[in-house]
Each structure stands twice: as C-alpha cells, then as structure tokens.
Image 1 (cartoon, rainbow, N blue to C red):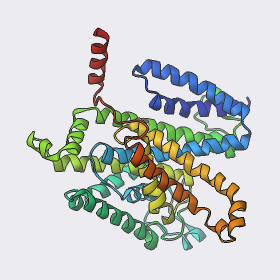
Image 2 (cartoon, rainbow, N blue to C red):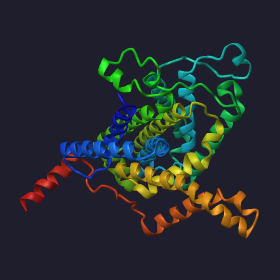
Image 3 (cartoon, one colour):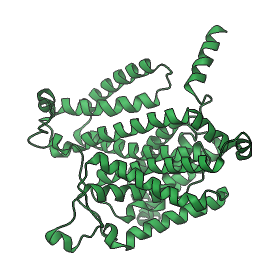
Image 4 (tube, rainbow, N blue to C red):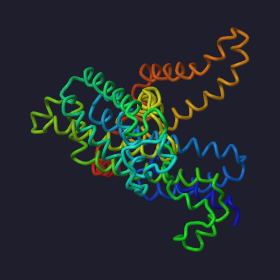
Length: 406
C-alpha cells in the first residue's frame, strides 16, 4: 500500500478533531459529519497536491500550534473564566515538560552517565508521563497559590512572573535535578513503532498493512494525531466543566467577588481550584512539548515563548471562549512562523540600509507580535470569537426552543 494513504488517514484524524472544536454548529452530529467530510477532502488534497517538504512543514506547524492551543486553554481557565492574571505560565509549562522527561526516560548508565544527571528515571509509558506532568504542575500551582492568590491582580502578576523565573533558574543551575544547563535527551516518542520495521506487533493486519510503508521520517504525522487527541480531550473536558454550575461560579467570581461571596461562594477556594486546573492543563501541554522536542533544556522556557506568546494567542482568539483560545493559538503561531520567511526576504533590503540590520532582523518578529497585541487591545478587545453568551448547554437549547416558538 502507498505511504500517501497512511499519511492521508493520519492527517484526517487531527483535522477532524480540530474542525469539530472550531465549527460553530450547535448540533453535535451535524458538526461531526461536517468535520469528517471537510477533513477527509482537505487531507486528501494536501497529501496529493503539496510537495513532500511543504506538507511535512504543515504537519510540524499543526503539531506545535496544537501544543500551544493546550497551553492557551489552561490560561483561559485562569484568566478568561476566573480573572487570575498569571504571568508565570512558563513555570507550569517547564514543570510539565521536565516531569514527563524524568518519568519516561531511563536513568543514564555507562559512559552516558558521566555527562548526564537526573533525579530519577522511571521508564514509564507516555500516558503516565503526561498525567504526571499535569499533576506535578498542579501541585506546584497549589503551593504557589497559597501565598499569592489573596493578592490583587497586579501583585499576583508580579508574584507569578517571579515564580516562573525562579523555576527556570532552578532547572538551569541544579544539574542533579534535570541535567542543569545541558539538555535532557532521549525523551521517548509514543507509537514510534508505527513507522518502524516491523510495525507494532499489536496492530491488526489491515492497519499493519496501512502503516507498513511509512518511514521513520514520517513520525511527525503520528505525533500530530497524538497531540490532536489530547487537545480534543482537554477541550471537551473543559467545555463540560466550564458550562457546569462550577464554571458559572468561576464567572461570578471573575465579575464581582463581593457579590459571589454574598451568595455563599467561597471565593478563595474557587480561585485556587481554577488556578490549579489551569496549571494542570499547562503541565499537560509542557509534557506534549517535551515528547515532541525529544531533548529539552531551560532555554526552551523563556518568558517570550512560554508566556507572552500564549497571552497574545488568548487575547486574539477570545478570552472566555475555548474555541477562540484554540483559534488564536493557530493564528498567532502562523504569524510567528510566517514572519521568519518574511524576514529572510527582507535581509537584502536591510543590508542596503545598514550592514548591521540583517543581524537584528529576528527582532522584527517580536515587534510585529507586540504591535499585533496593541492592535487587538485597541480595536478587537473581545478577540476573534467573543465570550459565549450562554454558559450552559441547557440554556442554549432553551434559547433555541424559544426562538423557534417565536
């Protein structure tokens, strides 16, 4: 069987899941059928018409955008629904990444042990590592939240950015923990056997024949499916939680803490729960990132990539809207990666102005994203998708019935 058939199937799965999350159709079945049809057609056209190098770039782009979408959903729980101004996303991002690395790798041995140090290595399965990354990030959030969540918004922001920098410096300097300034390598990749020879022994024969032609370089297609499934699970779980009475209580706390307390809501408890849940989701995103990169170090979690960019994604997509958070992640990651090509084209013109400008060209990316954030705040403060009017599925269905009766 041709490898393109396997690539088409692998691409259709994440496209279906992403389309299901973004399509604004109320009927679940209609949204599912529309997503399947659109994903099948688009994946076939992309695999058939695009050159191999271009489609591989698209798959890598979608993988990173999906990982950032998970991180943005975590921030949306904290800021979009509860009003917690967390500027320390990098702390939970990095904790999730390094935790799954410690859980899923094996302890260094032999010559490798002379230049690699880590606290432990459990050789645990991928799923255990991802869950552990989220749990440890949630525990860190709980410890951080005890002294900080009673602070006002501006002081909370300063405290969380300090925690993020402290976490980064710990991973940078404490080599016994996660190899310090040197990268942690050898982070395993889930379902790698799908692109190996022989294919996974547990696969049924039809699937083994389908994936048999794939090569190790095709693994990016497999991991995109893994990330898309995790993103879908996180999205559905958060939608159910945030449309429940608990989610409506979070909005009440965000809008007016005094009024929420007057009707019997424990504001401190709800703030802590939202902070911990958001950190758990960020830890899961960090774990996905670690398995995608295979080797990580502290430099991956600087404030620009691990905090600021995620805030811009949420602001553009729509604070308080999970679909908007996902859309914003894809749009901003597209802008961020696309500017690299623009900068390459501008280098000759910049060199003509001044020989020193081409070396400074990468900083134009920062300028562009900063200007975009200013534009969003001034002209589109609600984002591309404004906060949903109805906070429960029952209320939305009741409104539809009333509209039909009118």
